Image 1 (spheres, protein in one colour):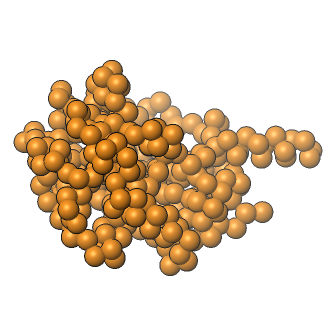
Image 2 (cartoon, helix red, strand yellow):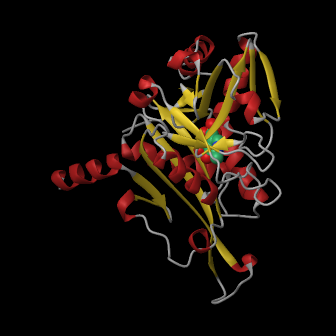
Length: 308
Ligand code: PLP
């Protein structure tokens, strides 16, 4: 009995899922092959970071998830508190103290067999957590991460797919990633059809010029890390500009960095053929990174998880 319990604990710590009210090892969490989340990419999701046994800005992530579901007319018949209980119980069961915690709501399967009407679908909430993920790994960042601005694929227009609803429609990002990887870059930045910087697969993009932090106003998810960056910049007394950011101007920046719940603030040493901060971490980026991680120790922003 003890041995079985130990085995289950080990499995859960590799990754756990909350699905149909049960907490199970992630490998055992399955959704039907005809779920519209899979067949139509008709799904929204969110990802909240857990560090040192605490959620960071949990309410902001839950609110964004709720807003995304509302905007897509998804209703899993769970309250915000239910979602919080599900993900908190799941992380506690996993024992993970540093975790990437995903929650998703898919359109589900039509209650009327063969129906093509989205209103007939039974919406399905599920969640999963794995050990903390960084969109660019620490050793790559330390060696100097490089990004390519794609020449072959533009970000899907806001008018087609609203980037503020966090989504799995990654066709543009995935094409861009293949292009970047084939050319030896770590990841990709997509511009829109007018040559304005948008974002990358899993991250927002920033330029620092002088004492001003600039980030794109459209074609982007309203990242929670992006919001934190802007708050930190304000605290540091830096200028903030949220606006169109043309590629040409971006490449003239003094420092470039990206932001994501998977890794926080991550310095970028090179974009295309342009080096930034002599391939080192720029001084203002460094200051912001330190501030970002210090906020993870501030009870104002954290929610403790109670492990067994
Ligand atoms: N942009 C996209 C497309 C993303 O998928 C993500 C996060 O996964 C981000 C930006 C960064 O958002 P956040 O800081 O909330 O993680």
